[in-house]
Length: 271
Ligand code: GBP
Ligand code: ZN
Image (cartoon, rainbow, N blue to C red; front, side):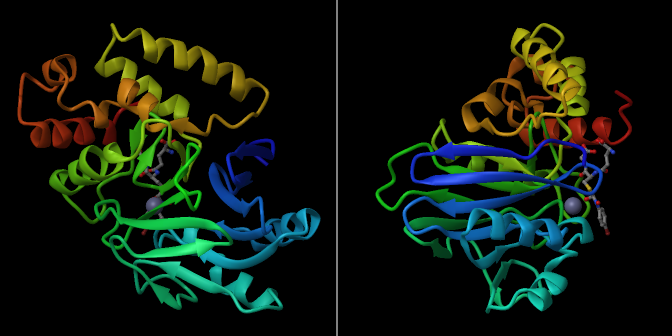
């Protein structure tokens, strides 16, 4: 395993961080009141089942961020192994075992928790992020961003455009409350932050997060979650309006063209 299992307790919910494959994360979301649970991107069904049994929670939902095998590749097997009915959510017909196709602003519940779907096409056309809050909206809330928003970075634009990633990061995800916890699909923080430092060498917040992340990774601790407010301070792809980032992108002031320039450079950047 690439990381230790960690448990993040938020108001009304508990998030179990489950490492998978080389650098993927699966997340078990538990409603504290009812012990109902949903699993995000269960690529390693055996670890999911073991955790669900240990925690004595009721698993009945799968939230899939996108169809790539390292996220959706465990869906069929989990559905086969699990004795009870599973609702499998996602925004793309290429997702295995999908039986609840969702789009922008669709909602669902996990016990008393509310989940709102955000359509964020670009990494893949059917990518969905899931925003989870308590019923009355108190507490910090959590967003599961798959391969759209990473800590300090974003996913490659396999099936979309800079306009679409701008809409995803700078319109939809930026509009979530500042204290929303961000749980992303991969442990890429050190690589991403090294690119962020290259873009903004004078941004001290980036240097501090690198030092922190190095310590965490030295003991195999996950660097997730961050928050939406933090991402706005260090993630170059959420900072395309900033003068320093625009300067790095050759002086362009159109945020969408800055987005395109940054992504092209990151595609071949060696940390
Ligand atoms: C790194 O940054 O550590 N190893 C490198 C990048 C997501 S996985 C590896 C990479 O390209 N990862 C993808 C990405 O978007 N990275 C962001 C970045 O490089 O800035 N995947 O597994 C990837 O989506 C995949 C699976 C891709 C099926 C295509 C298909 Br089809
Ligand atoms: Zn992907």
